[in-house]
Length: 213
Image (cartoon, rainbow, N blue to C red; front, side):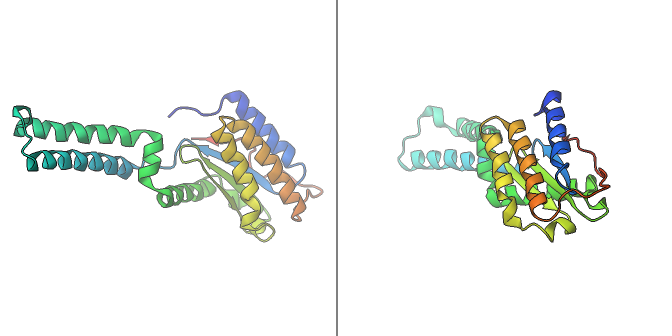
């Protein structure tokens, strides 16, 4: 699996978390994955579509009595096989794989992966349940912000939208690390303004490094 962020970018993101957490008692946990699923069903759908298109073309030719010697049964089968293979290849291209998977499936798989990351990073283990996971799934261009119970009492779901959009814009403009850094600072500001300002004696309970998988 290819790495999306350089080591230098990861260090900059870690420093951004450190700076943002100087404003808030909340724990900000960035987490990045290449993709949340392979979406094999999308590849299958694409292959099936191309398969059906070739069969339809052959059927039309047969109805019009336009079969030549070339389109005898062996070559017809070969064309169907080639069409299926081409369809599978097209379905593997990121844009088409997202298209054939569908938005609802993409969001569902990313959400599942985000909750897995929430548990893996033990975001729930802070003293006052004030951890927040910023989960970025690069392939899907989807970001989920999952707050623990102490966060959710203070911050509404819609309040995270600016942070989500900042990262998505970073992905679209090929400036992901800058988008993540800006989003982290915005997150720190939001938590501070929502009643989770830094407290005396506050300690760092979760590592500030960004996890990339």
